[in-house]
Image (cartoon, rainbow, N blue to C red; front, side, top):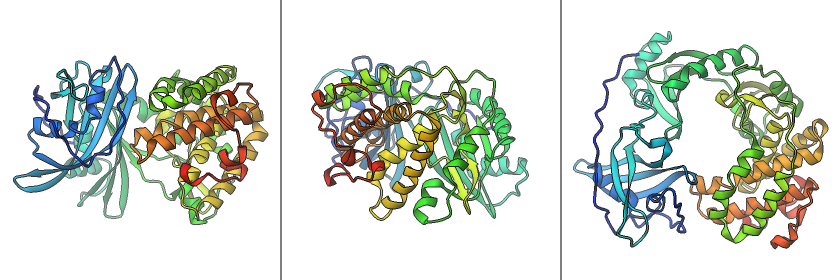
Amino acid sequence: MRRLSSTSYRRLTHRPQHGGVTNLPSTPPLSDPHLPAFEGMLGDGAVGTLATALGLGAVRKARRSHVTWRPGRSAEVRFHALVETHGGLRRLDLVAATGDRIEGVPVPRVHLPHAPGSDGCEEVAVWKVPRDPLLPGLRAALDPEAVRDLLEQAGVLRAPVHLRMRAYRPLRRAVVEARTGDHRLFLKVVPPAEVAALQERHATIASHIAAPASHGWSAQHGILLLAAVPGHDLRTTIVRGDTLPSPEDLQALLAALPALNDGRRARSGLRTALGHLRMLRALAPEDASLLDALERGLRAVPPSDALVPVHGDFHSGQVLVEDGRITGLLDLDTVGMGEPVGDSATMIAQFATSMALAAPEEQPSLRAYAKRLLRNAEGLHHPDLLGAHVAANVLGLATGPFRVQMDGWQAETRRRLHLAAAWVHRAGIEVSLRSAGMALDENSLMPLSGGSYAAESA
C-alpha cells in the first residue's frame, strides 16, 4: 500500500452562529457537567457553526446520524449535511467530539455555545469524514487508488474499484466494502496500534470456525483486509424464508471458539447495562424509580466463576448463513473470555427489542425463531439466570434509539425499559416493580411469549 502524505492540522476558533439549521429534529436538553460542550453539540446551530468554521460552505439540510455519549468522559456527534458551495450542493459527514478520547489529539477545534442562550462557549474537536484523527487508515480505505494498491499487494488484479462505507464509529473503527470485478472484500479500519492484535486473533479464530479470512494488513494505517463471506445475515435469512441453522448449530459455533490467551475479557451485558444507568436516567427521567428497581435487581445477580470463550456481541447481524449452513461469524474483535450465558442472552435480547420495529409480515417468522432460541438456551442455562442476563442486555439496548437518533427515540427508549422490567419479572428477581408505576403484563411486554406491542409503543 502506498504511503499517504501526512495532513497538517490547524487550530480553529469561530464565533457561534445563531439560528441554526431548522430541519434537525429537536432533542430535549441534555447536559453533562463534566462535558460542558455536549449540550451545544446537540443544538440546532452546531452543524452550521462547524461547517462554517471549516470553510465548507452554508448548510442547507442536516441531521444527526449518531451520538456516542459516555457521561462524564466523552461524547461524539456525527452529522449528515447538505452544504452549498461555489460548485453547487455537496453531501458530507461531520463529527464533533469532546472529552478524554480527543484530549491532546491534533485536530481542528471550534467553539460552540454550551447552553442555549448562554454567552459561554466550549471548544470541541471537529473533522470532516474521512479525516478521523485516530483512524488515519480511513482516508486510505476510501481512496480508490490507495485501495487498488492494497488489493494488488493482496493478489487481486488492479481494476476499477467501487468503495462504500458500511459502518463508522468515530475514533474507534470503520468498515469499507470494496468491489472490483468479481471480487468483494472488506477493509476494517482500527487505530494502528490495534491492528496487529486484530490480525492475529482473526488468523487464530478462522483456523477453528467459519470466519472471514484475512488477505493482509497495514500496520501503518490500521487496515485489515478481509475476504467477503457468502450468504445473508441471520435476520435476513429468517425473513426471506430460507433454510435456517438450528439453535444447536449456533451453540456449536460458539463452543468452537478458541481461547486466545491474551487476557481479553469479553463485554458483559450485565456490567454494560449497569454502566448505562447514568445515561438512561438522563434520557428517561420520568422512569427514575423503574431504573432504580432494575438496578437493585440486576446488582443482585451473582457473577459466574466459570469463564469460557465467547463472542461478546452475538446478534443476528453477526452470523452469515447460506443454504442453512453458517458460513461466517463477524466482528471478532469482541471475542474474549466471558460468562457462558452471555452470548445466548445477547442474541435473545436483540430479537426481543427489535421485534416491534420489524414489518408486521416479518414478525411471525422472527418470533418463531426467537422462541426456538429461547427454549434451547433455557435447556443450557438456568432460566432465571438467562432471564436476568436478557434483561440486562435489553436495558443496555435501551440507549440505542438515542444513539442512532431514531425519530421518537424517547418512546422507544421507554418501551425497552419496560421490556427489561418484564424480563426481570420473568427471572423471578424480587424487586418492587409495581411501586415504580408499572403494571406488569408479560403478554404485552414480551414478544417472545407470543404477545404483541401496543401501536404507540412500536
